[in-house]
Image (tube, rainbow over the protein chains, first blue to last red):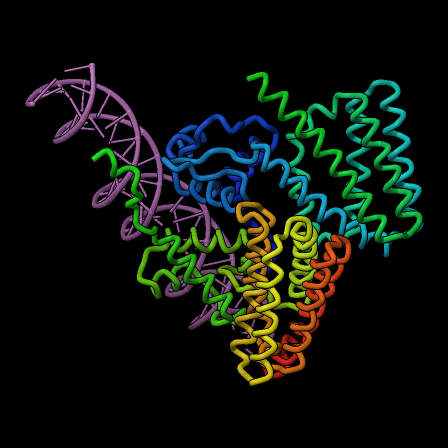
Length: 227
Length: 227
DNA sequence: CTACCGAATAATGTATACAATATAACGATG
DNA sequence: CATCGTTATATTGTATACATTATTCGGTAG
């Protein structure tokens, strides 16, 4: 069949499965910066040969999620105070700029949407459903991101960073004050958007993420104390 | 010898050589988006096996310098109008923010340095030594970047993007007006730094890079016409 | 007991082999 | 001559083998 070539029958390469696997494990915090990753060991564990494992590892390295050990093998990176700070700093820059762009093109109906998300989050917070608070807050950001064309480098970078950030927000997600701060931040963002003030938008988003950074650093401190 | 382990006797892996090779070829414009890159062919050409070639290719893909072809093989990316625009847009964001940071920590002696670079570039321009104009302009930016700690993600991203950008600036480097604009831009940047006004610094740098973008897009147009 | 040597072990880097699949070439048939 | 199917070719994906090098550990000489 000539049509057959249209349909991509290629199954997902092992390399990508391994990559996705490891990435998930890292981002979920399941794989910490404690354990050393070696090709052989991973290959054995996952029941594949070293080749696809190497390729997955190199990709993760390129993305900065793991780092080659001076000795040999890799280690999950990104848990040092500096790295967390940098991550949030970059996020603040990029998302701040994104909001500036968004403010120039946001459609009227988005305001309602965003308003709803905030209200739902607030309601969830007041009835103690923290999981839902997280859900609606995430929706809020997601909705914003969808207003940036999803093919752009900027979009991809933001999405990627938001994923990386997740593992540093365990505390905020549970603390009431943190959640309230986040919701208040969203209100400010929405206000800035309504005012259609690009300058203010960028500033507000930066401020918002800066707060998130403080929370993340607190989380980090706590974790380090526990160990 | 126990000392031996301290000294890293490992020679550079072929994978890295191939990577550096291809990257250089791409950034210098020597390898255009015309030719298709396949593992076998590259391996043969470079006289190595496919293994290190694959690894180099995957890395370049992760960095966005090449893109997998729907069919098979890779192609050099980043020459579409959109991609060039995005590249400069991101650069403007990141370098703008970097200048903001720099304005808060720039030492007194840097002002002289930067002044000198501008003067030399201007002098070179007036005597028609375009190569030198480029050199001193580059020094100007390099000096700025050195004021951002060179271990940060921000720094690495900026350096990386500047490299990627080079191949789109052939025209400016030869046109007198373009060069003058660049030098003027540097003067403005220096002024903003002297005023120690973070806001102005960020804005000025963004503006400066926006101009560079226009030049790059002109280059692109010209090239497309030639073909 | 300490320093050094060397074998054993671990891990990586590269090449190669083989299977799977997509693309291209070619020829036959309606 | 267009279309379909078939074979050949190109290209990739994975596994494996082998060489190289680091690290560790144990033992021996001083």
